[in-house]
Image (tube, rainbow, N blue to C red; front, side, top):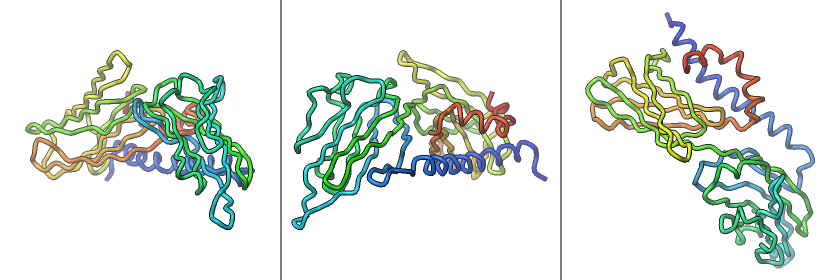
Length: 275
């Protein structure tokens, strides 16, 4: 018979994916109206701190008999910030009024404009980059704008190591500060100890140790999560000190306040396990 710990942990894993899908569906419904000309496959991306992220924006091009799409103007702005993030017009970048925050960190994909790709590459993401961006497109086929909400976090897959019957995991980059919890292959919650070490930039290194004996050929699950990112790692012990691991990331990119209010009653039991 399954223990309460098994039920709680198993239900938590299922709930994470169900709620993530539900949130994505709600966002798709909310943002679908009036956006026939412009569209985005991801309206709420999570940028990994200090890495590059693409803000998706595409439109329906209109080509002439020679297959040319005509002049396209693309402007990216950030709500609440003066100047532009990036502007492309007259077949060339126009960065005269670019906000200095984005100097040498942004670009489009000019060769893809003819096919309707107006996405923005934002390089070396910073914490202050978080916010709402506007993609504004003017083309022979139409005009329009669409909002993209960029969230910023730091996240990395943990590496596992086994020494004797001790199993540890280390993840180098997490922000905001996460929680961590372990389970065995049946979903039974396991006792563990987790330490957090933050550097001068406020990035946390996560060190988590399983306090119960780990056995060969068994699969263990480690969940590291904050309000933006959930990493679910599965490691099967092979007898080697370096343990192969598979990690899947899920992103909670609805409003964190909305997400907390929706999930708090359901995940209360699991939250108690993480504290």
